[in-house]
Structure formats: C-alpha cells, structure tokens
Amino acid sequence: QVQLVESGGGLVQAGGSLRLSCAASGIIFSINTMDWYRQAAGKQRELVAGLTNGDRTNYADSVKGRFTISRDNAKNTVYLQMNDLKPEDTAVYYCNADIVIGGYQRRNYWGQGTQVTVSS
Image (cartoon, rainbow, N blue to C red):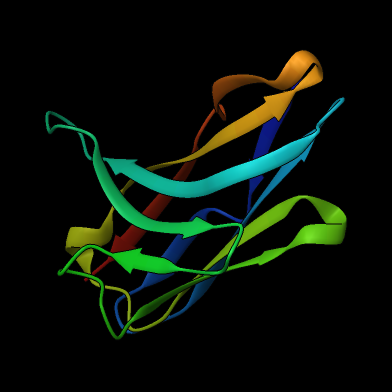
C-alpha cells in the first residue's frame, strides 16, 4: 500500500515563494519518476515538473526558471520549490510517482493534492 502525501500548499502573494513536499511511503523497491502536476479550476491537469531517479528534470515552459524540482532519495520525497509565483500558478498541485513494488510490478500513484493560491 503505497501512499503519496503532499504538503506545503497555501496562500501567497504574487512574487512570493512556496515549497511543496511529497512523501512516498510503503514497500517500495524503486521509484522511477516523481512528478508534479497541477489543475486549475475548469482546466485540464498539466505536468509542471518531472524528475527521474537519475535526476533528469523537465519543466513546463510556463514555470521554467521559476520552479525547481528535487528529490531526497533517502526519504522518498520530492520537492517543488516555487519562486516568483504568479496568479496563474493558482491550482491544486498533485504529486505523481511511478513506483516499482514487490514482484517488480510498476504502479502509478497520485497524492491527494495540495491547494496553492497566489493573490495579485
């Protein structure tokens, strides 16, 4: 039973910073990728940032230069440092992980989401 738990969301003024965390727990053989998605009200869910276990990263064009994804492998935790936040960053942010569990089975998991609201 793998679970992903996000934290760190909240209300921040435009130009401010916020750091999101997502911790994976359970019996985990390895983690292939840990990613951050977001979904604004009435909009499609989009990939914000992705990170492989080899520390390869990718970002949505809208957040390049402002957001940084990182991972603490010992804690099975992925972070999203968000700087220079803009109102258009307002959304529910979801952690997603591609995890190999017992028996070398690959499973994809989603966190419950954490709300980020950026005021103008």
